[in-house]
Length: 298
Length: 299
Image: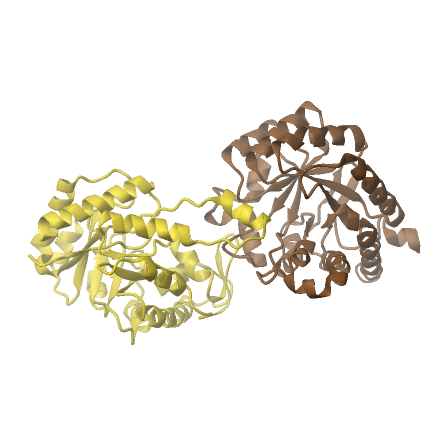
């Protein structure tokens, strides 16, 4: 069987040393975030993951982008206070850093939070038009995507809000983000996507990623459709710290193979792992890798 | 000159009034002691007297900020406070190490000094043990340092007060209120030179408008760390002292101005700025200066 790559959706748990951050503040020494990135990346490498991320350790996935884009601010919640525009690299510096610590046999996924999710997650004090706001996010993210594509092996766009309310311009938004991007792209939509599969498969990305472990009924609904993309198969829960055994993961992957066969290109956790304990996240990844090796070979 | 739409709190910290609309109360000046570690109590007594004299002359209230950097200094410094700081006067305890903060709280409780103590400070580095200690031994006043390593802008400082920026389980304001501390001062967290240091000044009116709390900072720290001033060594002290002028100009209520040895330079400067602000605030906004205001003293 051909090698299917193990990967992650995005975030990894992080424990920030606030006392150290404050000591550095009081003594006016610059603080570095690299220790947290190192920890996430090294855990993924040690678990054996083929395509690793930077762990999204700086912030939750919406805040990472809102914090750096023009026209946005974060006070109690992310807010839109002006026209949203690109204001320079957002995640690129961290991705460049990860490249310096990544072994040659591993790949890197660049992470973008989708424009629709960003638009839906902010309090809009400026546009009063979610469509226009989402497109401005998409244009800004496009610039980040172009920069990222020169560094990473894959760009993953995370659009959880599509499973809540899929706009009729969903496909065009993602096209706006990834047009002209030189590396492959993946769309991750968590939640129950069974009712929007016809729209999702129209989106011009190479890989579709969903929560097949938490929502196994998706196997049946996907069966009814043919589509050009390959599948990133969610294979361990990201909302539950309980560690799936290797056998349980293998059984799940086999169900996926029954439905998708050669279309499975990646196996991954269902979603980002930020909200589960770090030990649990590491063991889930490790078992995922072992299960993948036992099915697809090392 | 500012007048805020949000109602401004005026705190009474052991007889010292702080806060309110610009022009109402003079800027409270907080001078530091024992930066270098080992306390020299004899020299300190003279410096304290000098600062109190200049405070009496200008009308700007003075508060002493006692740095405690080692465990062995806790008891002698608190004994010194107990024996030398008048009972109707507050004082600030400035400790970085969380375990020393807890020891100091216990001792302040034993000496019945907590109600006069200004706890400097509460920030994202607060530990669970410190939170428990604060609930047990609650100081009358706390300074919150609104340092947000993720965003050093005024918005980031609001974020850290409001929700802790995902670095703490809740916002720093809620953490302080949970501890039962009623008097809250906000320090807008001056950064190192070149690291968005001006944001600590810009944040003063933002935070006062958002929360109405007495707000200030230690902007002199920026000057103290400015390497380019090495070429102008004779000017470091006046530049350091005058940097505090920005605080009342931007509506702030207190300046943590550095070593009390600088008091004789800082107090008249700030008094002058307070007079200027009061003149305009009274004529345009109708804010009458308090009886202790330097404008009442000199005009």
